[in-house]
Image (tube, rainbow, N blue to C red; front, side, top):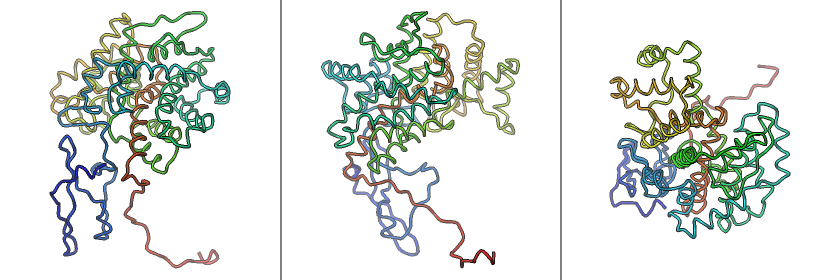
Length: 434
């Protein structure tokens, strides 16, 4: 895929008195890269880039991210337009298929989601075998990995069945997530309904009960749609790169997605919104003096950092945060929440930070994780389910990348190199002489 963006320009590398020409590649949005695929073969050298911060592992036409200018595009569409005008299912279709659906295509895709909403009854019994207090992410990962055993026909020619696989995953993962929450409570399962939308169905499966029926709140449905859209894809992050790397070995889609879920589980990746609420709990438990914590965050000698502010990629305001802040305000107003001390703390901290020159100069604005944690708490979703919610949103992006990786004519099994720094070859010493 990358070859069609190769330019006539060359970069030169001189090493050991020899000069090598390397092709320069330019992406459709002006990103420039030096193509080093032939470097080792020509020179005997590799590059060293810990964390792959300056290394492109693939070319992709799914998502464009410009951290310096706060731009995020899915398939060329601005995230602001998609979050403001589309349902999550429309955006999922866009990510996987490359174009927004027509009315007929959206209807057909929605019907597939409805058809696949239930999970096999034998899988329902799996929930009983997890110990009390099992992490929802471990349950989700295990259950997704098991899907290939219940639907083995999907492994034969995956591209022939990709639409069906995608719909099956997007629909069943929602049900698995809601069931895992109900099982953690010891509460009866609530099965999906054919008359509810994707997000309304999820909220109903989470919160409906035989003793108290759940009334679907349109503001919360709208906010959940936006949250899932904003998390739909974010370029080659840790979990997406994991899905592509595992999939490059021609691993089936379900197992590849399961690997991505495990990568997302890490506190440095998908656990940030959970960390926000845990930080707020700590501040509240210590008396609620948030100004003391803001002062600590500004102290260069104090390792404390305000979680939920700033972003590793965005050097200006995260475009997703502007959208989700409005959704956050709408949810809190709709629910009339005015007595939750953690939410009050969050609003007070946000107000101070947005006016503080220290944070403004360093581009430490509230990010999407800060606001999403507040919304999920207001909805009644427990903290240990926050990363599961992240996985629900990221699922279409993972599927799109797996599909793109599988179809790439230049694709190869991922096999990073290393620079060995261990001992040189040593003589073996018999155990009696050691």
